[in-house]
Amino acid sequence: MTMARPRKIGLDYFPHDVDVTTDPKIEPAIMRYGAAAYAFYFIHLEYCYRSNDLTVDVSATETGTEMREVIQRKLHIDERQYENILQSFLRHGAFDADFYDKTGKLTSQGIRKRAGKVFEKREREAERYENKV
Image (cartoon, rainbow, N blue to C red; front, side):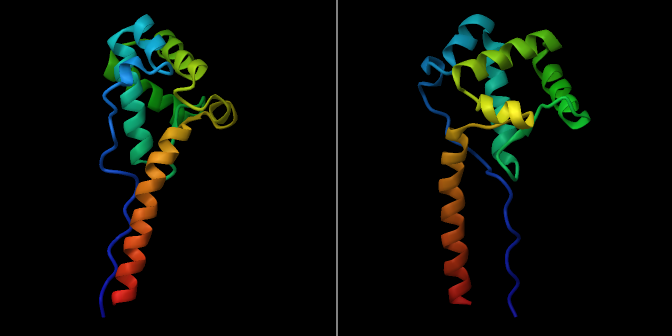
């Protein structure tokens, strides 16, 4: 009897486009808040891509508040700076503002689209493996 491999959660890596700093969804925050905004964006992407549901909870809940505090410490920014950067990204569409308003979690259509391709490939490979066994 063969044992199935454990199901992988999230992604181990994600694409980093070479024009991200000139993307109109991202550039305004970087222009206003500098390197902290750049790092803010990619730290949140890392959390999203490695999660089960492609989101990161930054809500007013205890879990969300703790996540905000962790990221604030990583970036050496305060709550006000965090909120200002977040609102810029939400305003310009780097993260899904409607989803955030409803759930307190960050994600985007781009995240779901890119990860969806990987998840589909995993499913095809799993089916192919199952059919061989």
